[in-house]
Image 1 (cartoon, rainbow, N blue to C red):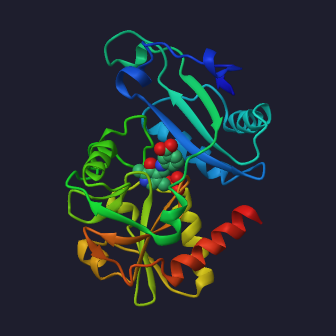
Image 2: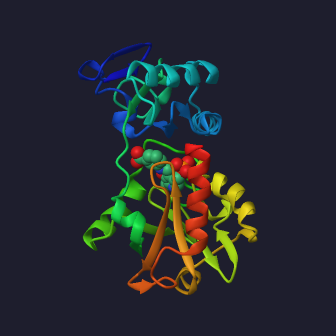
Length: 283
Ligand code: PXG
């Protein structure tokens, strides 16, 4: 495997960063997880837009233009002979001294890893997954806006640990107001009485690229689709529920907090959206 790191592609064994990189010391940096299907990078522009917005929000100037980074993403695929792949693009604050001061870091670090992504097991796609709502709330946007896809995922990891303790592979996070925000690495949708709904931007969520794709595809189902605040009640009475993300794509949720969602099987709207999504990526 060839990894891009700060200007060149090197074998993965040689792709090393300094222990003084503030990405490592403080989680000071941003990243993207992107998919390629059949040699085409899916929604690359949207991912890079989000990456550069994340960087701007933490006052980090990427050392290269978006176009150059896009070219490097394709180069990473070529060098690794990959057509279907997962790309991890990271911009870190770079090497500095001990101490938080980001101004002491002269050169932001850029890394691109092109590999394969382990999706949830097929069984979960066929039958849906069982999740819980976490006690850990999603980061308050006033403290650290979840729009920023930062290298500090501890908030989500704490929720994930709750899930693992309960034997669940994914967990839903509420915001500090008690409204549904998202899962630890996916956005969430419900279907109820013929309406598709997902938490709005104001719920304090990562504005998922897959979420946006699903909002676009929803129009083709003929069903209304709304961004609105949802709470636990909405989950418990939903006909269908599913998660969306770059890694997961679209996956059905069939139980929440031990309660069966709908009929406890992946529902027709979820399946229709999955088929439309597949057409988009495989077509
Ligand atoms: N919410 C959070 C908190 C995420 O981290 C999503 C929603 C879905 O967004 P996209 O743009 O992917 O539809 C994410 C995405 C990984 C990994 O390696 C994480 C994500 C995506 C891909 C890989 O852990 N998070």
